[in-house]
Image (cartoon, rainbow, N blue to C red):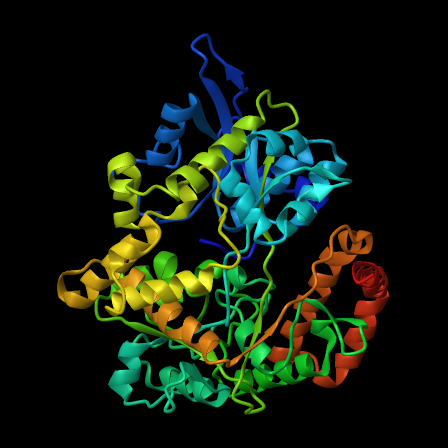
Length: 560
């Protein structure tokens, strides 16, 4: 599972130490050591979720993955802290601010790695990578032209093991299919797996007015207060797919037709998007509490049947929507992409492949190579096992139960950049009987296809996990994302990757705060959108101009 992780500078968090000690599920950090039997203890910072679907008796600290690491590598994994969502961010930032790091942990932004580097807190992993990374792991990074490795490098030293950005667009909105059927709504008449903004608006309005689950608290559309997010993985409960359809690409630095870098949150298209959301707010379609709802608040609304319009990635059923199904067995969802507002028949999408999260190792840890060996085990040996059920029976049992990926030692993804669409198409073809399931190239693909096929053959006796796999792997990937790519509907924009922009490191936090607070005020009517040009000027004065200048220089250097 991936939520948007909002980075806050460590200095601000030092004032909240007492609060942090109360709110995290934290343990005292244990010293790293190799005992007389050769067993090495590693302390981890663990990002958790509320329902990882672990079997009874298993925990984040003691599960099939941690036991396998112990068996294969003679390593005992212990949690320095365990926390979910924003609490993880706070624990992470406190660890950075205090300098008291776990031996290994995952951080979610390059800015955080930069701060760790600046404070000389983490190990240089250059030699570790060269000597210990398996050939298959290196091939994964090669498929991205080694961009993730570059993003994890500072002054030509590899300071983290990067995850990769596996997600692929277009952005999706999940709608309550059972409500659509109950209310007799007609969507996607042309069958192109995409709906218009007008269709989305009317569906949300009808859900809000009719309140199909009779909650008395129905909301048409609920969005997180940060409104948009860069990266497909952070698309849950945000408006990115909607504003992309308006031609706006907020939180991205992009070149125009003349090669001039601009910031996507400051364009006329973004102003038009904000005007649209202001109108939806005034009409009562957008959540009247927009600006104050947390991620967990919106999750509860979805589970309780208060809203049936859920923006999110293709894999949302696997870690989020299945909870709705468990709470209400009659609930069902269908995914749609969003057609462009200019009626050109296209779907705007961002292809932002590169580094995802980052695995860092404390500078004081005695055996940094163990981080790479754990990565090899989880993301190469297990991922490429031909007979998972025979070779790794406990991991196989987890796959059948759809245990969440956060229970792995490192909550990152590592996968080939060029295979996501191809693999999804191959799985769908096997499910449809066009090819044989046993001919799929990996066990994971075969298992996904069999699970979906079993669900389709006998949905009444299936579990919520089977339902989720059918919706994510087949309906979203195979029957929504793949067809929109294959039909040529996707207007895909690839933003340049800029690393080491000093002005960005200095100003991004305050610029994001300005943007989010101002956009909330525009939408709820506290400020007129006539003020938008003033916002742009303030953004530039508060550091935006310096970021644009350095980014322009980096872009020109990149193209030499």
